[in-house]
Length: 333
Length: 226
Image: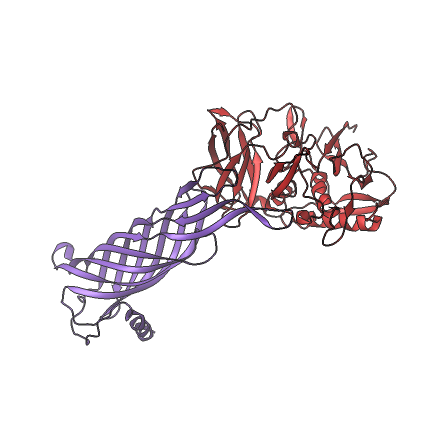
């Protein structure tokens, strides 16, 4: 059968700004008038690592750090995706040759992009054919166990990129502040898939958070994930009008975990999956802690002119089901 | 077995009955069966405080907002059937229904969201058993102090109707029953009222920190003895 291929490039973990991606944890492509989730059709997903190191990170160091990051995603008990090192290659990431390659490339022109993931997608099914990750050797890298001052932690950045590699988009669970030289500085984040990296030296993003785990489990559900976890859904309106791109967070007071999503259509609807059954607090906020184009392409208009608010009811998430539609109303700032 | 149970009950009932009076011949009427219906109030149960936090670059945490949760006090209805086992000991089967409110107060939002208390109505059902020991002290024929203790199964249904929490409960305390009349209606041997104050201990059910919850409970009921 003849297949048509489409290349979709995602500039991902960045310093201060980012390029386009899709929203709520999962990538999607329009096929036959419908949005289809982008994911690997078969596992284990085989990948190659580049045989080239950079100052401070040998090729072996690179392979080991990337291997640890893959293992972290693979260890999620509610997700079925697995990965397999296929070998070492001299090929560079970014060439559409059917092999997924991770490696360094020097891109000094991308002075705010630490790393990036690109895809080759079967445009008739949405299945991933190839996914390459390049790490920008214009920056200084480290694989030291405790991190290294002034150098970006390769394992942390790889963990984020492998999320994209697997089909996840960005999460907005983080707080930032603008900096005088332009861009943003991350104050805190509760998702590895937050689009902006911690400062050099930090190893805080080596651990997946609830939002990341919900996302990968939603994409590749394993075992009884779909019957043991629940979801929460509803709409967000401002002045009676549906709101697109509002960031909705579900907080579980029992575990302290947060999982989030966005309103993703013209009706202002959202759905948050992968939640532990039980009461949840719901918070809605504007998408103002990262550049909007980190989440939505320019065809969407995202309204960020509203106040952060909480839903005035506790929302019970059932086991293996949905909370039922809740209606969140927000007001102008 | 019964003798052992009586000894145990006697030991802790001393906590609730301070009278050192000698044993008396008077006591509760020698009816065999008692049916009661009434109201029960269970006090507020704190469920703890939990902050929503995000991870900082140094590996610490930064609070996004804070929550304090409780299951509100609520009055409900209860009913029971008691069977007299000995002169002073009654075994009861009991059930209750109440509708407390789960309240989660949200505050200290890092981005300035207005504090709010999110709520949810919970339907709480209990079924269990109790042992009631009528204290053998000097008393009038109409008034009978007693100690009570028991436990059972608890089921809490969330407002959506799609989520159920289950757990167990225990209670212990004391009270007084009063006969309003002897014999007469409904082929009964008497009717009266009963009031009690107890410690109510809940395990599991709606809980965020896993521990048992202790609250004050009090009830009043109307009973008929046969």
